[in-house]
Length: 504
Image 1 (cartoon, rainbow, N blue to C red):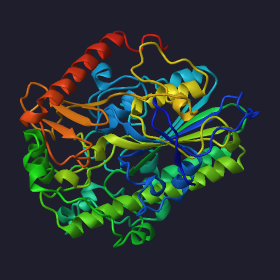
Image 2 (cartoon, rainbow, N blue to C red; image 1 turned 90 degrees about the vertical axis):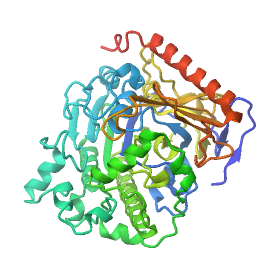
Image 3 (spheres, helix red, strand yellow; image 1 turned 180 degrees about the vertical axis):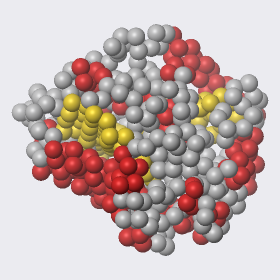
């Protein structure tokens, strides 16, 4: 479908078909809401959003028939902090959930349950404890990270139990370390067990079975958490073969880029070579073939999830749920995949902080074939979902609803988006806290108590290769963004003084 740009001074929206006149008979009924969250999926992994090297026909359908947000940014560049912020409506500095393993259980899902929704989690939520019964879900079928080596290693999730029932050991660091090519593979390994036992296939099939068994009596909120394409990058062979030798236009890593990065990033690059996180041994200077294979396997993981998305949509339709459903597809953060010389997440580059967000419904709830390029935060999905369900958001939320934009109303989104991250082990001893502020032109990355940082002119340097932090001609822009960051922190802390007290 060809997209046309609307003329509006208050919003940048590319729209396809407008919402037809008249109301569907289903619009007065609370919709089923299916929230699909992948783990570590970059924004440039869906063909219909302008990345033709991808094979994603089912996600393409959602794009072409729904609303896509092309500038949505996560509140933290790692799993648990980002997810906790999404499911609470507050940034990490208010939730105090800064890293994987920090205890979090409270979510706005309880408000859906209190309003009569049947609430279900299938797959990854990444709460701590993993299987908490205090999250507001009526049912939970937990599947966590593919490779749990330290935190949570002893926990048996639904996928672990299925593998054990088949007499199989789950692939992970212990197994992969025995391979001769382990240190040279950048975490890319073919799946060599039965196809249906792959984590993403398993979670998708669990969701389909649940849909097949649920009666169409009460509305449901179904959160499906796919473990992929998070590493290890482990596609089944038939999908890995589809990406073999595809031209992926992988970005060159320049010496200028590496030399201008803050010291904690240099520490992290070395650390990730010495310590294998998630079955990845990073390389400081990987070959083109190493980078190509890693990218091929990662993208094949995405296409596997796309395949399951098509089957999930088919199950919803066959069971009679689809006509009154909203499907939202997104991811908790991206992955550098050796871009900028880095492994995985933990930085503030767009390849990590910018994620796909697609909302789809067959009714007249919102625009069809629309692309919204205004800035939004990932936490804004919370009040959007609550508004779809006819529920008021809690007072003091740092999040805003994106539903008006989805309906084609004149909105501005956000002027700035923010992300933050605590030190953890991989960032070393050079900094305690990292915060990002970004608008359409500038991105600033601040390191607490330090003289170094990052500043990018995104209009002149969209790939974020030229750090202007110390350049004399850009000090006015730097201090303006620092002032924006300071004012945001003050107002956010004041707004969330007693966060979540009105939930329960």
